[in-house]
Amino acid sequence: MHHSSPPGNSDLSRRGLLGLAAAVPLLAAAGCAPGASDRGLRPDGALRVSSYITPGYDDLYPGLLAFNDALDQRLGAGVVDFFDSGSLLNAEQLVPGMLRGVTDVGIQTSSYVSTSFPILGAAELPFVNDGFEQLRRALAPESPLENLMNEHLRPQGIMNLGAMPCTLQWLFTVDRPVEKPEDLHGLRIRTAGHVEGQTIKALGGSPVSMSSGELYEALERGTIDGMVSYLGTVVSRGLEDVLGYAMQAHFGGYSVDAYANTRWYADTSPEVQEALLEAGRVYAEIGTEKQLEVYEESYLPGVEESGLEIIRYDEAQVDRFRDATAGVVDWWRSTVGDDELADRALSYVKEA
Image (tube, rainbow, N blue to C red; front, side):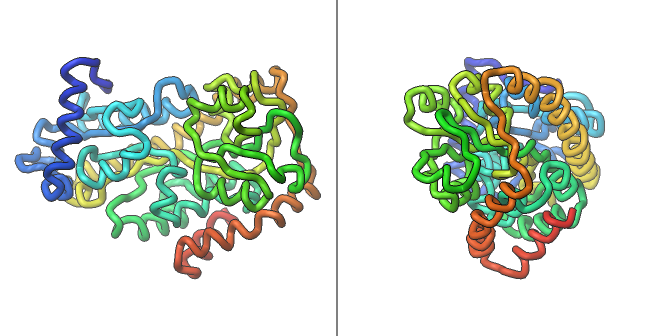
């Protein structure tokens, strides 16, 4: 049975874990504490999974549960020790904490990770292919792109077990629609990742970084003029009440991925490794399907029935935005630092 421990002493123990990881980096970096179980799990036989995702994400959370269920079915009920809602590690701490052994698996949005691991940005670029279904194929388990990413990530300490691509990121504004690139000039737009930030810069806007919890007030007060996000952020925060326009186009794309500590993974038993890979496949397939179902049956109809005006670009408009953001692809290639690697990754996204 998966759980987030109740408040009280459990919270103290979590802080103790974080303190231990910081105080004894060599032990934690080994990825597997002394006295580990015979399957290469933690001394108590647990496999620790952490995420900042909360149960409030009706579209994303079922994928996390499917991942945990798949592990428990393979390894035994109760093996997974699950910390959601940032209760062990918040979004910024998750990958560094996993590298120090605080958690074995971290489920994290790619926009938080691609700054440190730019290869992941291949699937976040704007207007690079025909949209969600193509991204879904590109990020499928054992796809050429997934294999290439892991080949690049493993030496850096993490590996991708499975990716759940989110529905595409749209552009939202408060006061006026954006029908051509020039309409974005001078607007302050909240972005969640560095690729999105470059996209807004390329279109003449000013990217602003803030947490999703601050968006409602910032939009209502005019601190920002709009945002780039997938539809789930709008619905979960009630932002359709303060936004005026939604530009339904491929302004970006990100995924919520299950990552493992590579060194820890190598130290576990073949049984655990096989279970993790199977759980990653279940997560990618069932999680993505559930997310799309919620989008199509709940999120999209709800927004269409709200006062938010949805603008869908024609082919000529898409071409103008693609041309205007072409420099973002060049910028991303420079962040990867290896043109051949970047071009291979991008080709896998475009040709999926």
